[in-house]
Image 1 (spheres, rainbow, N blue to C red):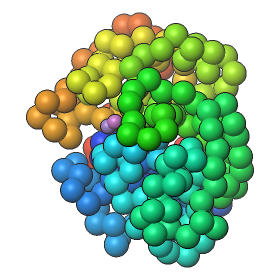
Image 2: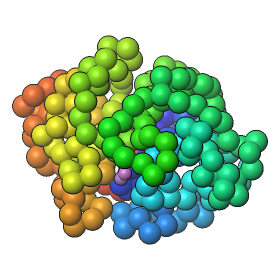
Image 3: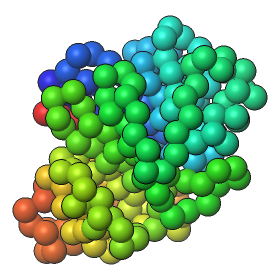
Image 4: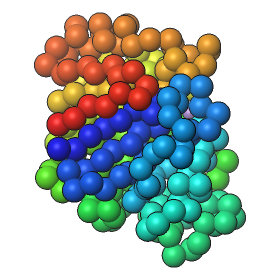
Length: 227
Ligand code: NI
Ligand code: MN
């Protein structure tokens, strides 16, 4: 069984049925809603970062220190990880629209509407070995081509920011769910700071009204969803 564990904010640990550990936006140290210490996490096989803001790049370099972990990302982000001391052979470049296989998973990079110091922000679509499709939107406002992603990929799980201020708010994110038409949605990027939307109640209610067929799983940080 595959598992998705929310590490708070935009950080997730996805564990495939084959036991590979994929970390997305692993901001652990200093993340007020991260319930676990970096030392207590299983070693990474693959690390993905959506953009270079500190609440996403986080501890990516540290997770890459151990074992056979590799990172895939835009060349500009790969350059920053190299500068942080990550050996070049652990880094794989890719860009929007492209796919590659790592840790037994097909990783596809998508656009996101946000900002970054270098490169551009992105999202990721992961196709697990048994066919489960997970979309991590990164930090983004809503965009109409989410509908295209929903047509191109049979998305099982969408991980969507709902916290407003820096990303979509619950109102936009509920519309994004309609465009993407996943089986289930896990909200993220809320509750971390006082400025953000503090809970998933409004989002859950709006999705229930707009697309009642889509299940909303509002995880507690540290909790996981298995499927
Ligand atoms: Ni950001
Ligand atoms: Mn962010």
